[in-house]
Amino acid sequence: MTKKLSYAAVIALALLAGAYASLELMRTPTKRIMLIPGRSLWEVADKLEASGIGTRAEVMALAANETWVRGLGLPVKSRDLRADGIDSTWLEGFVYPDTYDIAEGSAAQAVLEKAVARFRQVWGALSDKYEERIDALEAAYGLTEADIIVLASLVEEEMALKSEAPVIAGVFLNRLEKGMRLETDPTLMYRPDRVGKPPSPTERRDASNPYNTYAFKGLPPGPICSPSREALEGVLAAATHEYIFFVARRDGSRGHAFAKTYDEHRANIERHLKKSKPP
Image (cartoon, rainbow, N blue to C red):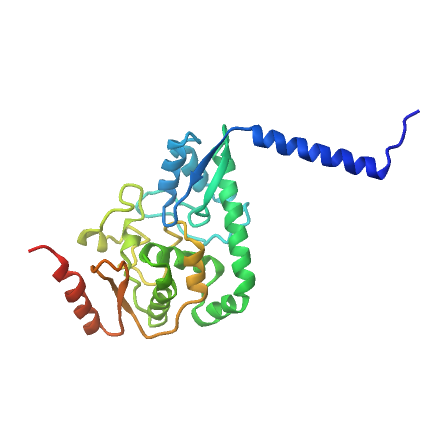
């Protein structure tokens, strides 16, 4: 006859099983992967491949799989296929930049899902904190949650100082409100062979690149990198001001000079860019 275990015995066995599982996890060799804010999926794919986790092709195939990405419950922005023939990167913006301890032998998909879960945790907390602000951004600018993440990726690429994130976000919102092109250089370079490099005048005129914010008004079709919490929160807590231009200071501060008019902006360019060039 089988003896029935008491409730206390069941609990004790469960605790023992949990402790054993934790011990086994501790015994599993791991590697630490640091995903840096502002990196594109192509750069993340290279990082994972260099760390022995999958291949660049595997990562980018997953990133291009719209069905799989939407199945992760992410606020993905609908878009057309790129006219320049580059595969869509549906996963861009959702691979949260953080430090991860990954078990040896992990597949690329498992690592991506872990980073996506971290994004959902961070975004969920921000969504709760700024629920009214999210509604206000939709009412004032027509921005969806997906749009906010796109905008945060632009802020991430432009900011060098975390403290400037709300100010830069405010510039972009002002330009959207006025119907101005965003004209942010990092969007020109959102392609696997050019990401992270300085743009050329030709690329500013390249209308085959749908991410080109010099050629097209409004936001690009999707995020251009993995935004940090600071960039996401910078959009949600965007500063209210009248600036519509900014240029990088070349004085060692790593900050920007902001301007309300084109004349002020030209003066800032003269002061911070042209005079910083060697004779």
